Image (tube, rainbow, N blue to C red; front, side, top):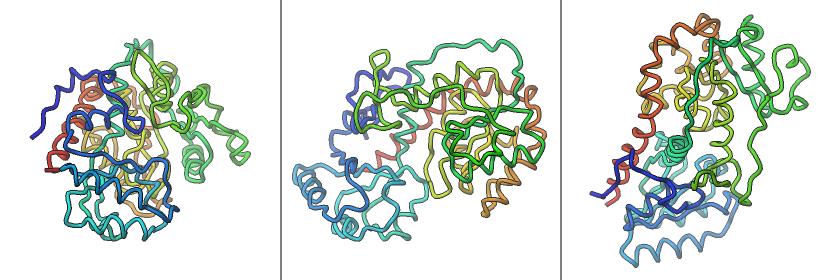
Length: 355
C-alpha cells in the first residue's frame, strides 16, 4: 500500500527527525497521508486538550488520517478523562493511537479508549537504524574474566534486589555488577557491586530531549544519549557474553533499551522486568532464547518469585556461558542485524492497516 525503501539502503540523515526520532520522520515522509500528532510537551495531568481536537480536525479536513504518537508510560497513569473524552469523540473516524505495547487491552479495556489502537515499534527501530550506521567492528580478544554484566544504573528497589539475589546465590563473583550512583543504594551493595566505569548519558545538546530522543550529531545523523551510552558499552565490555538487565520497572508494557541493546551487541541476555518480557523481545529476535536459557520465570506473576526463578533456573548459564556464546556466534551475529529489519517490516505491515 505504501512505498518504502529496502531496509539496508536506509540512510537516517536523509530523513528529518520528528519529535526527536528519525524513524518517525520516515513515517512522515513515506506515509504523507498520515498526520502525526505528538503528545510531547504535554502531560497526563493536563486538563485542556482543545489543541489536540483542533489538530485532529485539521488533519481530517485535509483528507488525512490522524496518528497520535505517545510515550506509553507517560500516558497510562493516572486516568485522564478529559483526554479520553476528546479522543473518543473520533471513535468512527480515521484516528489512531500509536502504542509500543502489544497489550492493546491496556488502552481499550482498562482505560476506556475507543479510537483505534495500533502497535508500531518506532523507538527500537530508531535505535537499530542508529546502531547500524555508527557500528565500528570490534575484535574479541579473549574470554572475559567476567561471565556476565549486570548494570543497575540509578537506584530502584527491584534493581537492588537483582544485585542482592545474584550475591546471595553465590554468583556475584562470576560477573560484574555496576551501579551508577552508589550513594543512592543501601550500603551493603559495596559487597557485590562497583561503580559503573562508563559515564552514563553524555551531555545533552538539545534541550528537553532527554536520553531517548536524538540530542547530538554523529556522522551526520542525530542520535540519542541511549545510543551513545551503548556504543561506549560495546567497546568497554565487548568480551562479556551475558547481560543480566533489570528493566525500568514492572508497569512498563513496551520494549525499552534494556531489551533491544543486548541483541544489537550480540550478547546473550536475561531480563528482570514484567511477566512475559522475554516473550515480547523474542517476537523480533531471530535467536531462540530457549536454546540457551530456561524461560520458566518469564510467566511467573509474583515479582520476587520471578526473580528467584530467573536466577535459580539459569544458575549454570550465569556461572559460565562462554561455550554456548561461542557456539551461537553465527546466529547472534546475523540476528544483531536482522532485528532492525524485523522491527522495520513489522512497522510497515502495521502502518498499512491505516487506510
